[in-house]
Length: 171
Image 1 (cartoon, rainbow, N blue to C red):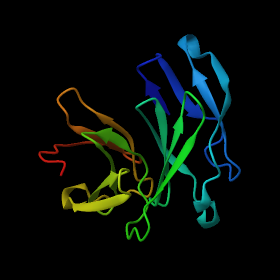
Image 2: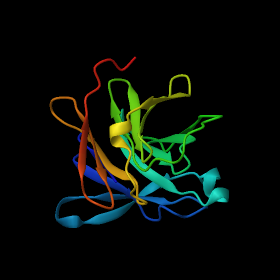
Image 3: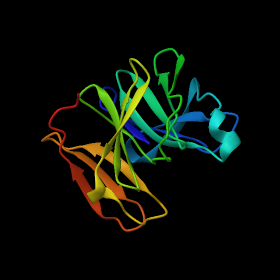
């Protein structure tokens, strides 16, 4: 689910685990939910490996979908429905569960104590060691956000514990 501050709606997927793609839902005040005509996610190729769309973020008039195998970020333009797939070949990182946009990059966290920085301009990913983030939570991290002071925030899904990460130099 992602919030679009430009139009005031939440966006979500009708079925996050459908190998054929999903309708995009727009959620307004009072929980009124409609299917957005003409907007559908592409199939996620990682479904062959028990994958699904794990995270969603809004940035630059697009919904950005994150594959559960951490190898793909796909943008879905809210204006025209165009999709662009960013493959991160050779990603030697286990799956992460959510992503957030900050300072020109997408960010995610893995259970084994790595912060992942994705650059969709050149389809590169960097794993930054953060051993203090290693958790033994089979449900991983989720609910990524950026605080008003620029901290990245993630929640350990199984415990509800909140972690904040200060990025001092995104490069």
